[in-house]
Length: 64
Image 1: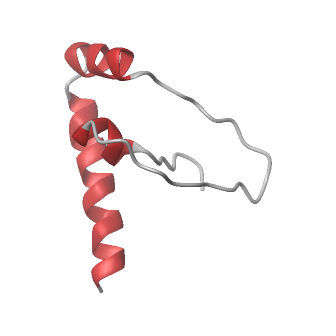
Image 2: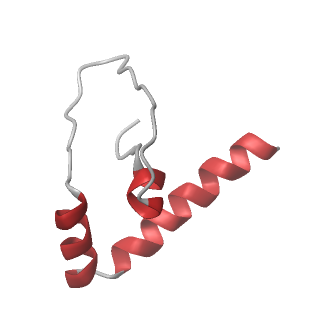
């Protein structure tokens, strides 16, 4: 789906995680380093709430 993300929990916890993802259609993937991620959040703190909302929605889907 457009705008989907993965790997955000690893960025937040700084714990190495092992996961796979497979695209069902052509897509563009963005990889961001932890340093760049932290710099981005420093310049645009509102992004944090978007990521947290995404994590909460994802967790809610798994516990229902």
